[in-house]
Length: 188
Image (tube, rainbow, N blue to C red; front, side, top):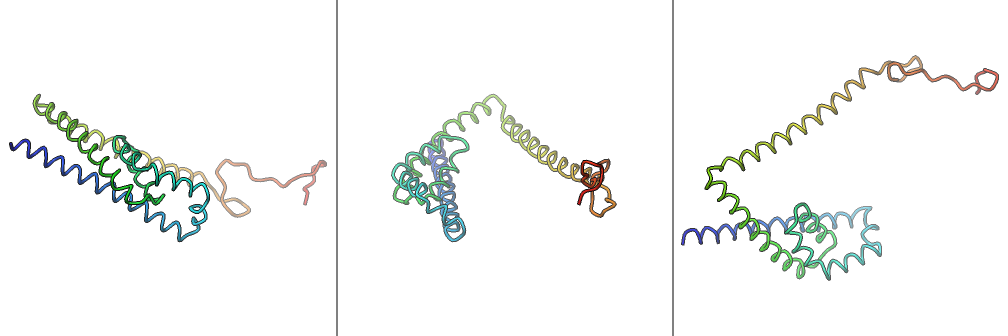
């Protein structure tokens, strides 16, 4: 009995988490649309193609919202798009609920199965190692990009020198010459 209660609790927690995440992403899309309507983007949101897109999303968007929960990387985009395109809540909420139910079921079954298999074989450290490796890769990539950016600016700055006419030019660059006409005289 305790394991059934634990599974039901885990399922409920995952469902609520998916609903909250989806609803917040939808709300951010609505806020972005409202801000866009109050700015120079107003014309963009009121073009005929946007109005047609809004009607399509309002009519067929709920299945798209539900199915987006089974994808990786598309879920937030679909939820935010539903908000930006002002999908009515009477269509969005059922799509969100069905999608959250599916997402919770997948994460509970697949996730728990993987954790049970790793734990049974004494391989509980594998998920921690994967997270650690991912963290090292992200941090080192970010530091490498930042270092390259800073180093690139520093080397570029050190290769510049003052121009005799004022301003700055790169070292070794040929100074601009006045335009000459066909007889070798400077043209004005």
